[in-house]
Amino acid sequence: MTVFVIAGLGMALASMLWVLRPLWRSRPLPGIALAVLLATSAGLIYSFVGTPRALDPLQRTAPETLADAVGQLEAELARDPNQVEGWRLLARAHLAQGDIAESMQAYDRALKLAPDDPDILAEAAEVRARSHADRSFDATSVGMLEHALAQQPDHQRARWFLGIAQRQAGNAAAAVATWEPLLAQVDAATAASLRPQIDAARLDAGMEPLPEAAPVAASPVNITVSVSLDPRLAMQYPQGASVFVIARQTNGSPVPVAVKKLQAGGFPLTVTLTDSDSLMPTMKLSELEQVRLSARISASGEASARPGDFESAPVEVEAGPEVAAALLIDKVVK
Image 1 (cartoon, rainbow, N blue to C red):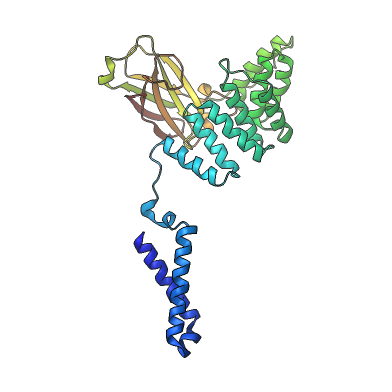
Image 2 (cartoon, helix red, strand yellow; image 1 turned 90 degrees about the horizontal axis):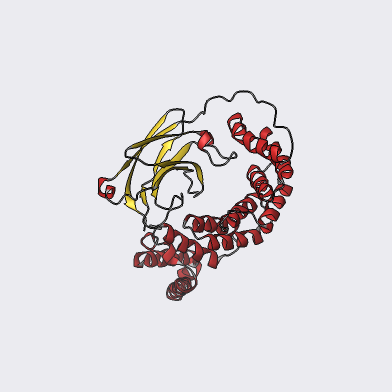
């Protein structure tokens, strides 16, 4: 920091001497004195008003944990609260930490700045649904989804969630009308996984099932994952626990793209993830270039991490037709 200040003052002094050269050529002492005074004043003002510490690499530290990143982001938003993407990122970070209430509050702040953004509306509605024990979409969430589709009728995520909300409300015919346009928007593999949902809704609405579709080609992505358990944890393995193999996007989004749940009888386990394991018809493994894989042993039977669960470190792989990866479950969730 001292080097920075000295260098800054030196540059300022040199600049002042150059600008004031007509004065110090005719009257050297007053000219030099004035240049020093101006440079020193500028340095003192900047030290109080500016942020020279922010320019010092020794003072900049990258966040080591998600909690550190959240703290830095909250500080930045306190300084400038008009950053839509900042609030959206904070909402996602809170969601990754399992803080649903804080995530909802951050999404509310983002929506105050961008009330017509369909992506934020759909994400906020999903988080509100996750705040309920039965994962139901309340009236506020439904309003968000309807508003998102009013702004962007082909928004696949909003359309998918709105159909779920309509099914939850017992309005199967409305769900059919909401979901069927998705068939023209998604690829064949996604459409194949969506058709059973639509047919179930059509049956509840007293309608005939959809006409037979053309055969779907094999999944363009097959990720074979070998899951092992650290012998040190084998004695602590909870009886009746579930094993989850989870695939996520590599951009930090906490929402799984695909999940496979197993009842482990012994390790190592081998599973294959394909598009059929994707959780939503609007996001498939085959749409990703890279995938972040992880495995978790859950005593509660839920995919979300709980204290005492066992988990692996994440591994990133290229998505492709024949991909192999190995995961070692060797950590205890705190």
